[in-house]
Image (cartoon, rainbow, N blue to C red):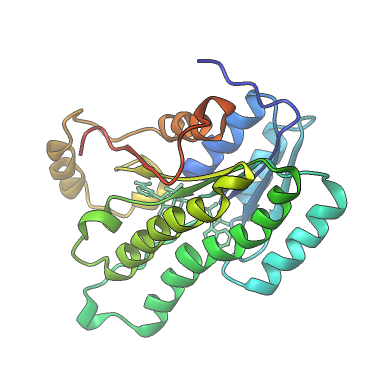
Length: 245
Ligand SMILES: NC(=O)c1ccc[n+]([C@@H]2O[C@H](COP(=O)([O-])OP(=O)(O)OC[C@H]3O[C@@H](n4cnc5c(N)ncnc54)[C@H](OP(=O)(O)O)[C@@H]3O)[C@@H](O)[C@H]2O)c1
């Protein structure tokens, strides 16, 4: 299936590194205009900007966990773009620890970025999408949110919350032509899991039926399907891209 996203405006949070970077690049290749949001890694953002010079890529730096920063972003976005067709809530962080030892700031930071960030970005997107009676929102969750994972109570709670938000928002927006879905990647080879010891990586690979970690582009393919017109009867669902994990 070849997707055509010409005339589409797409926002990808965490769109300059890892999975988000692959999503940004896949949409650009398919003809979309993309706004990629990042938070701190200026070098990665500059590299992407340079690689796609001359293409309709905008890169914006702000903290999605801050409601007022999200509101300001959309005010500027509205002034420049007449529509928003696709929002990919991809930005996420991990601050792993067993719950008994978890500093409250690590709990709060993970919930604020992964869950509240999804709320902040979706709220203004929905308002804009309703004007055109069309939209696609795709939230990136994790198997951790479904099964739990020792040392990830903050991350798992945020990721489960994203799924609940996905299903509720899908019901609210269905009649307005807006679909809301989640993608749940398994182990994907990005800096996000770069801190795992080699031994742990080998053990995880043994548990994956396809016997390898996924590539960011493989997650991007699933996201493009959910963003396309071809996915018109899919809403409130979670698509797993886990190699069978
Ligand atoms: N990789 C995996 O194995 C895996 C598995 C399951 C789910 N996921 C989920 O997939 C998503 C992407 O993961 P990844 O592996 O691509 O991670 P990554 O390589 O660490 O990239 C994370 C991106 O999110 C951005 N970001 C983080 N906090 C932000 C904030 N407060 N405001 C704006 N942007 C922020 C980062 O910006 P900077 O570049 O400025 O830091 C970066 O662009 C996450 O939601 C993660 O939970 C990943």
